[in-house]
Image 1 (cartoon, one colour):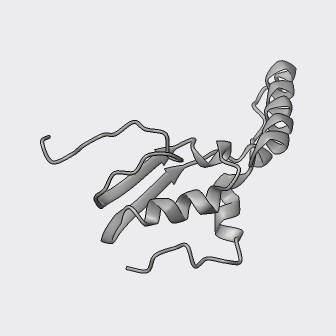
Image 2: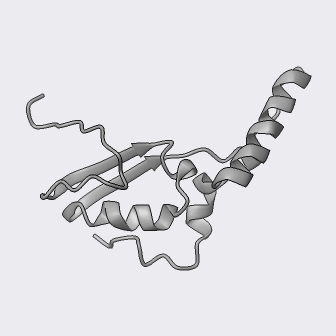
Length: 107
C-alpha cells in the first residue's frame, strides 16, 4: 500500500516536519517517564482530524491463569513491581482515569 508509511524512530527526538493522519504506538507509554507529555507531542503531529492509538499494558490487573501456575504468577508480580518502580505499570487503564483530559483532541 503506497499511501501508508511506517516510521521507526525515537519518539523523544524525532521531528518529522509534517503532519500525519495517524500516530500508532505499542508498548511505548509504559516505558515513558512522562506519558501524557508524549501523547501531547503525538497529538501535535496529527492533521486536524487525525487519530492517535496506543496499545499498552496494565500489569496491575493481570488475571491469574488456571490451573494455578506459581512460576507465572510470580513472574507477573515481578513485572508489576519492576514497572511500578521504573515507569507506569498500569498506564493502560490510568489514561481513562486522568482528571486532566485536555490532551485528548476533540474531532
